[in-house]
Image (cartoon, rainbow, N blue to C red; front, top):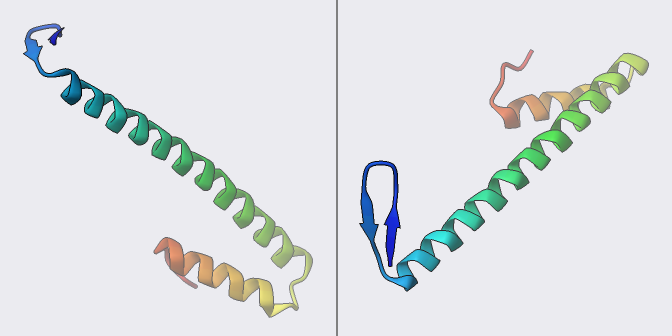
Length: 77
């Protein structure tokens, strides 16, 4: 198989090409999964911040926020 790029021509077998396309599809799927998880994480952080604001005497939510900060590797107050 011959693939033309801007500056080069690449020769590879059909099997190599299928492998590259499979790799690319898997990579793209993982990127989408990470984006989705980041959105869920942001929603959870927002929810916990609201709960801390609405229930300032309840240390349970503060403990959850502390653990979330620890998981993210952020600064824990």
